[in-house]
Amino acid sequence: MQVNTRFISKAFLFSLSIIVILSSTTYSQQNKNLNQIKSTTYLSEKFELGPGEVLAKGIEDIEFPSGHIGVKSFDVDLVDEQGNSVPLYETYIHHWFAIRYHLNKDKNMSHDIYDHSKPFGGPDYKRNDGTCNTWILPHYWGLGSESRGTSSKLPGPFAVELGNPANITEGWEEKWLFSIMVIDTRGTEDRKSCSECRCDQFNLPENFYNETKDIHGKPLSHEYKGGIFCCQNYFQCKLKNGFQAPYRKLALRYTITWIDWDQHQIPVRFYVLDSTDRVIINGSEVIHDCQAEYTIPENNSIDLVHVQKASIPMKKGGYLIYGTAHMHTGVVNATLYGQDGRILCTSTPRYGTGNEAGNEKGYAVGMSVCYPKLGSIKINDGETVIMESRYKNEFLTGAMGHMYFYLADRLPHTT
Ligand SMILES: *[C@@H]1O[C@H](CO)[C@@H](O)[C@H](O)[C@H]1NC(C)=O
Ligand SMILES: *[C@@H]1O[C@H](CO)[C@@H](O)[C@H](O)[C@H]1NC(C)=O
Ligand SMILES: *[C@@H]1O[C@H](CO)[C@@H](O)[C@H](O)[C@H]1NC(C)=O
Ligand SMILES: *[C@@H]1O[C@H](CO)[C@@H](O)[C@H](O)[C@H]1NC(C)=O
Ligand SMILES: *[C@@H]1O[C@H](CO)[C@@H](O)[C@H](O)[C@H]1NC(C)=O
Ligand SMILES: *[C@@H]1O[C@H](CO)[C@@H](O)[C@H](O)[C@H]1NC(C)=O
Image 1 (cartoon, rainbow, N blue to C red):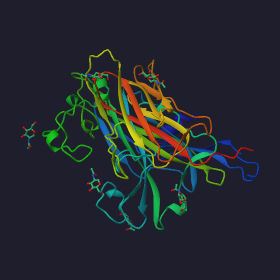
Image 2 (image 1 turned 90 degrees about the vertical axis):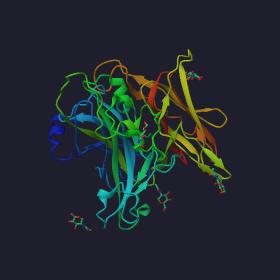
Image 3 (image 1 turned 135 degrees about the vertical axis):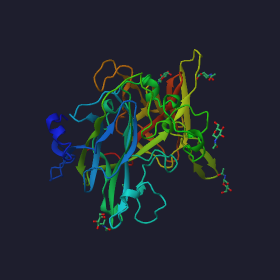
């Protein structure tokens, strides 16, 4: 969708919301009310960033379509005050995650959103159906540098059902937040290392390793060479001598398309599987232990590909409707296999070749999406799938291998 940029810059004064009727769809001849796919483009709260700086924060209570709806797509861009897309070599989009939560309307707890000790009224996070341990990768939508070139569109009558009053406790309301991490790499000594969150490029606080807890709440190992823990809010990446540039204000511009929910929509479940998941099976209990990120060590081997994989039992299966992967620059591909070795989905990168936002040379700027022929790919209940991520065999910190997919319990009736 094209958005008028003059309109966008004014919208920094007020939050923006344009409703455009994109297309009309009739899934069924019996559907008397013409149910239309709607599209709204919003602008998040803005944030300020200077050369070399990391911004890693949550933006609570973002604008989101209300009511009982089916979301068809959720696309995000990073823009400056004029509404122009900011290229990755200026501000690297490490990730943005859209996270769902329920909040008690009677409590003024919105500022305690990260305080999990609040038993009442505090946010009740609603994670996706993916298999990671509770706090890890809970989002419903989320990508990184590949955001601009990766479709989030759900085909046909499939949609993510949200806002069903039957699923929201009386007195509570459904809300969304963005968890984002972006790195301003203007003027940095080593752009690539800053984008990879290499610890030795950042002004780590004194006693950083002694005081930082890893993803399991244990002290961070001194062997940790890079990744999300070295890219905390307002950490500073090394700049070239004397480099100066003004701070600038940026925001996420996001477009959601959705349809009012009716019986013609088919709900899907969203899964994130992580190739670092160290699954432990103890009797009938399956314990997941996702690391979220990993390091690819220095390697002079001629074997050019590093392979990371996990075998992950799926309690419940379904028809595969959509699949893609969130990975970083250096990605070769990611594949989800069934228990019998059949390929369920492979996602491959597109690397940029130019200067403009969306096509930045050397960066992974898009991942391909699997849209299997309806009904052709099904994961069985209880099936153990294999999630495999492949990178070039070069030193890389903070590598991620996350497969995103949607499953449906049923297919549309063909008439
Ligand atoms: C919540 O806080 C606002 C501003 O601090 C106040 O005006 C409002 O009455 C509070 N609401 C409740 C339910 O406590
Ligand atoms: C909503 O609630 C209904 C009935 O209570 C349930 O069948 C359905 O799975 C729920 N949907 C979601 C998206 O949680
Ligand atoms: C922090 O770690 C260093 C090792 O790098 C160690 O020498 C030092 O004693 C530790 N400091 C504290 C306060 O634990
Ligand atoms: C496995 O389950 C048994 C019985 O429930 C429990 O005692 C044991 O601690 C579990 N082991 C692990 C590694 O979780
Ligand atoms: C180098 O990479 C290959 C292929 O991934 C791997 O088998 C080998 O163990 C690696 N060697 C070192 C020293 O890490
Ligand atoms: C993924 O990349 C590997 C190279 O490591 C290649 O052999 C394989 O064919 C690719 N998979 C697919 C399905 O394209």
